[in-house]
Amino acid sequence: VQLQASGGGLVQAGGSLRLSCAASGRTFSIYAMGWFRQAPGKERELVGAISFSGASTYYTDSVKGRFTISRDNATLQMNSLKPEDTAVYYCAASRSRGVAPLNADYWGQGTQVTVSS
Image 1: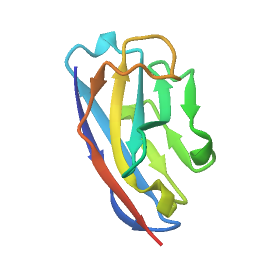
Image 2: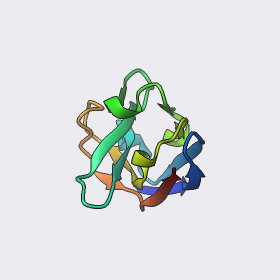
Image 3: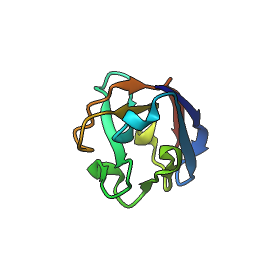
Image 4: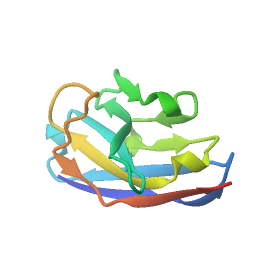
């Protein structure tokens, strides 16, 4: 399975960005997809995840009500962005059941999201 992330960029606080992750290859093996982020000096954290069926979703507390993940290319719609959302975002896919924790088997390349104050 190959994951191709797109989106990201620079936006002012309060703005919006959208990240997408196109999967190719043996995608039938994927149970769930999600997005992690890692800011400088911080550990990588799971931001949001969704099962392939769309029945299960997960959001870390700091993004609830602002971020939405959808089944279509695991698109992560990020609204009301804050400077603390600045990080490199990585899409991931898991063959294991469950969305949190997301046991990633496959990773996409990182994409930078920068939110200016």
